[in-house]
Amino acid sequence: MSQPIHTYIELSGVKLEIIGTYYPGEDASMDCPGEDPSVEIEQILTANGDDIGGMMDFAEELREMIEEAALEKHVNGRADRDEYLLEEHNILRREMAMEAA
Image (cartoon, rainbow, N blue to C red; front, side, top):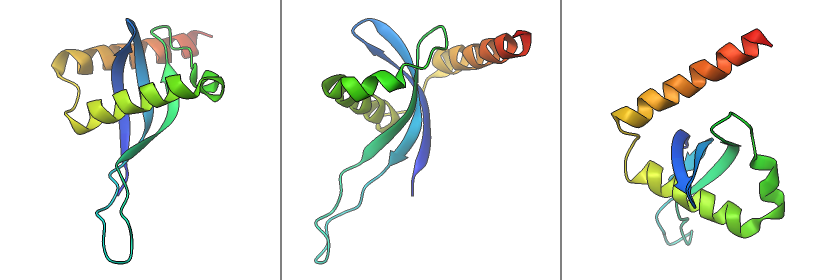
């Protein structure tokens, strides 16, 4: 069963907010070769809240690096308390900016 992902990663010193879906995959059976866990990225947000996900169409290697980092972060543990507070702060900041616009 898929799970939503909302986490932060750092790639080459750039902090990114990743929003998407985690797919746990399935074990191999006699009828099926199995499937590895994977993620589907819906949004890649910068610290300013800009969605740079559309750039991934032009950078296959970068997209793969971001997917691997998001998958590792999701599988190996949830965001710790500080990341959670930062996440909540960024969401509130974006909501306030949208209301002000």
